[in-house]
Length: 106
Length: 422
Image (cartoon, rainbow over all chains, first blue to last red; front, side):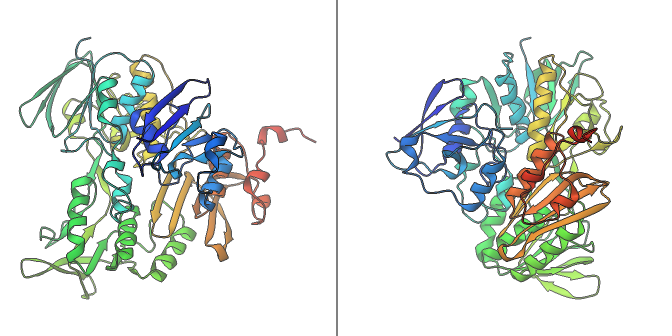
């Protein structure tokens, strides 16, 4: 089963088994991973599912679409080159994605 | 404290309250009770992405079964509370229609609102639907394949979202709005005008100032909608979205003060000082910093359900945190992504920033030099800039914002820093 590793800003990690096709946001929220709020439920409206993607996984992801890119300019914690909104990241077969959540989403 | 907290209502507000409490370390039992035969699910997509088949049932679920078990939140489905006995200390027993009893040390109401029903001839015909919960949405979705003509009554968010979805699904859609413009209560005139043009161009027949006289049958089911001018619009399906009424009956039965919702204070506490009420059913002090004293609001939004539930969770754990936030809203309507930051009430001028070529457009609402709110269409950059500025008490000067080539973030300033600057 694919899995996603969520590390919070204090360095604590949690590994969650994920379903192919689900988003990295859904995978976290449904299991109660702290650090991802996702107020809008994945409709790209709130920018409270901001994550920093581990460099190793970055290249495997599709690039940001314009709306995601714009939303990321307003996140609670400043964007970096590896910033993504986790509602836009789909879990793929065999993926082993590692992301870090910011100290705050709102 | 053996019985713990009973939360009546397992939609966004109830779920947020339960999860916030566990995040705060609240250790007493929590019962999260809903009257639908579904696991707690998210409603916003029902009129949009879910209706159009873009997302699955599973992606609507708030949490996995394991989450509820692990966090000792007892999720009860399909139980409708019809009577509550409450003692002065806030504890009591709730009785359901099925005869079950739910004892509680403390009660929380997240009972939401119900669709306002049309009172016209023909509204009980098969094919006249409302859209509030999953069962409504399942019925709507099941009927769509057999439908060609749809009439949506009500040009608010639900009506427009559903109309846009059904239009995209290839149905012939007529949208009737009684007012002179779309979404008159939630957006300003410029935004209404933009939405009207957009949805008409997309193929929806929008009729403003439409008076509905009755629903016309065809055989034993719905056949059309007769307008007050006598014209009949054909319909195989009529969807009614004319607002909601907060569910206050239970609260009233236990003596809580209600007035367009259950009246609560800044900490989500009802008039007995113990019971909390959260989400669409609550009438609360306007949470916008600087709002007029005594101003009260009732929101129908996810953001409010989440944020108000947080202060309610603090109140239940004995900590007083007042609700002070900038509300925000979203509505996806076909190709339109509308995001609203703040409340425009009391504005005296507007500023329209547009990039018409790319379909991006925002309306900023000002009172004097102070920005109060923004409606942003396909313009997340402006939305985030205004929401962040309002949240931090910062200002976006009108004249600077008037230049559409500048980013609002770049012209945001701290008004307190300007005092005495010269």
